[in-house]
Amino acid sequence: MKPLEHYIKKELSDFIVEEKLNKEIKNSGDFQIYLLKKSNLSTIQVVRLLASMYRLKPSEIGFAGLKDKFAITTQYLSFPAEVNIPEKAAFQLKNGKWKKTNNLDFNRTTVFSIEKVGYSESCIKLGDNSGNYFSIKIHNLDRDKKKLLYENLNRTEVYGFPNYFGEQRFGSVKGRNDFIFLYLLKGDIEKALKIYFSIKGSVKNWGNWERLYRDLRGVLESYEKDLILGLKRGLPFEKAVRILPKNIRLMFNFAFQSYLWNEYLRKYIENKYPYRRVPFIHNWHLSFYANVHDIEYLKNLKLPYLNIDYRTDDKLLKKIIKQTLKEKGIKEEYYGKYIAGIKVLTDGERQAVIFPEKVKITEKTKNSLRINFFLPTGSYATVLLRALLY
Image (tube, rainbow, N blue to C red):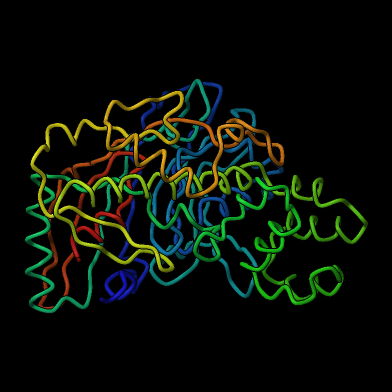
């Protein structure tokens, strides 16, 4: 079974994302609203660059969600009204340096542009978008794969698709069950940091901080350099880990809780419906139902993260959540605990099934097609693509 990467993201323009902001844009207000368009850059990278350029803290720049790096994406940013920022600006990475540019070739260069669109009374926060429009080109489609895609597309119109967290949620995961979060939970901060930096490159010189700094310097963010230099000065691991930005420390927790939630949904589907297994990241897999006998029930079902503050009445689901938490060694005493300066293992709930909207297939060729659709915030296009292609 070919991985998803075989079919998508051959070029930046193959994956286009446009955010729909759930906030009124006005002619005046306490915050300036800008439209950001970027290619080959993550949202966090652009936010840090803008913060550095205009002498801001990254936390002063608001955004509603993280957008794909290898793609052409459009989203909204907020800045305090008093900050002096050009109405329009564009920057291109050239020879390792950022330079102003008029060459907005988003498909062939690492570039981003900002343009002021108005004001708002409040800053943009995570979740302030109602969803995203996607335009995705799918390659390497033989006759059978294209036929399967159309069959699965018809199925999603009737049954929707399981609302799994996509691979973007698991950037801090090095290998199966090798979650940085679990080491933090057990108090092994050094191991957590070692795994974190191993994602950047070789950590063979771990403990020799000067050599480690030299080995990784070319790929490190400024705060990661500060962390290693802090260790070199004798800073304890427990304090050094807090040099990582809060949003990164939170992502360690989110990655693990997202994994647990995916496991609940996968097991629920496998226990209740005819299903097919689809490859995911590492040696994980996701399960997609072939048909559903109780779609009205399923489309209204929400799965809790812990079943503590948000409780389900579904007996099968309760059993699965309890078993999964036990298997992973998660005890109630861990719920809401503060680790590395963040509150972890908090409860919430998430819709089990999502229905894509405004689906349209365009640009058909013998071996490729482009599919356009809208997904509500928090749902993943790559999960829908798996539902269609396998």
